[in-house]
Length: 565
Image (cartoon, rainbow, N blue to C red):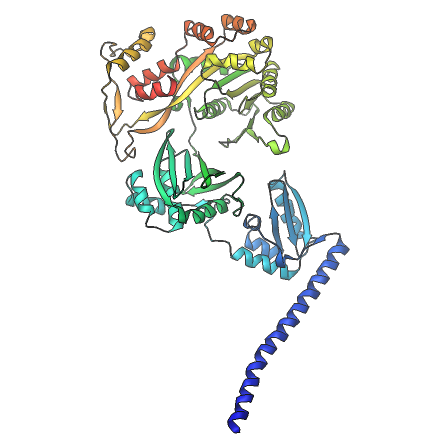
């Protein structure tokens, strides 16, 4: 009997605990309901919207708007964020500290509407716990920091881009991403491609204008790598059926690299491409760009004018924007107001007012240019002349006493005039507005560490001789047209085995004179006639400029003909 009584006593004790826990849980639930009810009543009386975050989805990109210290101190959380709208929720929206945070968020996000909500202290706890669950990543201005030690470690382990693939197979997801970024930074890559295939993801890197396959990531790891990329770029992690655009910053020592991220749905998953914009403190000069001789002299002369158009033409990736920024840095002074409208702003320039195109808010090139004209500018940069409205507004600006710099997609300097006329720009306006047109391409520099004399076939030598004969006067004294010597890189550690390291521009500069003006006024669309006149006035063509550089060992004839032939 005693054993039976003892059994029931122990059983009742065990049953008491869950009963107590249930009772306590029930009391807590009642307390929280009362708390939410009081908060909702206070919100209504003070004119605020109320929200309970208990079952509200909290996107990572929204939570990261404020630091955890700010959230805790001001008792505020960002619960929703898009390009058009931000939602802030606070325990006390009337508090002075909250008003300071609100003011800062408005300044940082001038194009977003901001909605305010009141929440309970319990909802704030929910948000703080959600913040703690976000993967810990070292951040630099909403970006990722790669230490110099990590870069050096990877460089010691991997001496060529080809070895990346072997290394990737044996490291963690976090290290895969850091390794690829470190390699891209070290190689000064302009673009990084993650291209999904059926069983794996191909990683390619664009170095000096040429894509190189550097790795293949197993498909089973791709979802984690893609999520990490999206997290850094503040993109929606659970969205993969529509394109998304974002950005983050890489910090390497004291160097800051802006990374633009683009995602695109593809057959076997999302394709992701990075554009890396290196913000070095080095000022780009005409000499470093490769402007020299006739092109250099004409451009300097035309830049001294107070009005008119200077246009740089070429395909995407030919260095047009870099050339115009070098012009602005040369023109910049305390007495001159320089303003730009760009898409995107690739280089942040001190002392120059730069405006970003935002088509979602009707800030197009044409609309931005019209607004700039009301800001008393002396010099205006229009990032790209891409449509009739922008073209005509640019021409009008040049005729109204402003020096206007712009770019256009055209195959040569001579082809730019027919291109502008095809955009319905009246010939009688274009003729007086135009000052000078640059045609340009980028070619790879021969690696100076491993360069050696190149052997060219007869057809190549014949083609080179034909191009150089009209400009024999410009050849160095020691150069003999009958025995031309050129150079090529053999491949070494300094150039990652590619034989090339860095790029340089090759240029042609078409200066408007009376004969060119007559052709424009006639409305002729013959770029060949324009080219012939320009050569007669002394223009050195892009191919000729490139071959002169090749004779000095700067680049190779193959690069010149590939880029401009």
